[in-house]
Length: 231
Image (cartoon, rainbow, N blue to C red; front, side, top):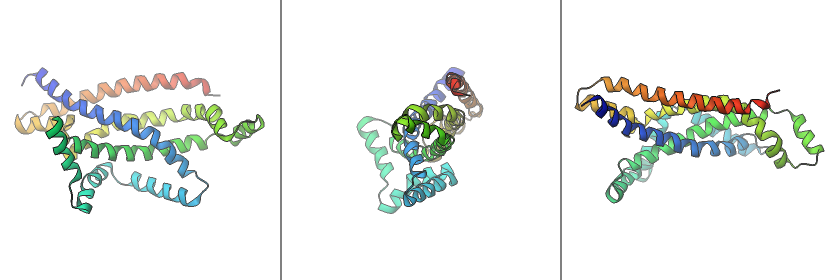
């Protein structure tokens, strides 16, 4: 295979990596906020359950979580649900690995939602009580205070830690190959096994570096635009 052919082959896998990255962000970013509110709830039962779930998800390696999501439903119900989804989508829509990708997306979304929830919680709790009190004096309700006063400051404060998690996410997509999802690392391994070409495995780093560079510039500009909240 020529260099261009290898690049195109790896790029097909990188598109799957980008799909996992994009869908995980779309699901985990909004899901993290209600989890954060549950962790700060005044109802002790809700707060305790939320904190235990976050502790478990953050404490178990993501690869193991992927295995749990993919294999445990089949063990519990004696039906390989995601394998059946693989066959269904391939037979009816010629889409390969759909069930495996769905399992990966579920695992990634839950995992990153829990991490984002802790970032949200830290940002919300960093706002001084005086700002809430000032809002009450102005006649605002608690939701109005959060929306008009607190939220914008929280966004500015959470951008740096969120940026780190987002950059980590694109690299974590490589874990999808643990259940044979054809992302870029799996594609490189296939070339090593079938073509005895090892160098594409190292070449995959270029794809990650370029995309991380793009994310770094983009998130840096977002952080700069929000810098007017700094005192």
